[in-house]
Image (cartoon, rainbow, N blue to C red):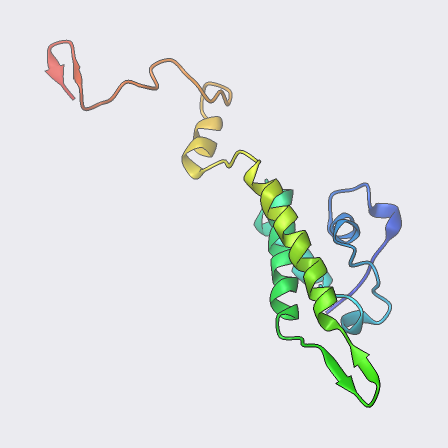
Length: 140
């Protein structure tokens, strides 16, 4: 697995922009410092090519699932509050979920209609006509 980050590519939609938006830019320690591998980020961007927000949501969700197993730890005066890190990602997940809910989803049937002969218009002439109603003398 690769863990890379190039700040000069943040303006391009891709792995580096996603790392920047998620704050997962500390890649020097590879898996010890970065939550997501390059392949995971690229796979989600490719899985949702039309929805950057959905890819981002799925990546945040994956990090939250990983952090759900971490617990606070203390021993002889040394302590780690790992739940703070998990809470930050849970808040990001809620914000991404709200952002995703405000986006109008494109279902398969609508997306198919957008590639039709009417140049992608959502509304078209005759869209409310049913083939199961009478048209003139014959039933369809």
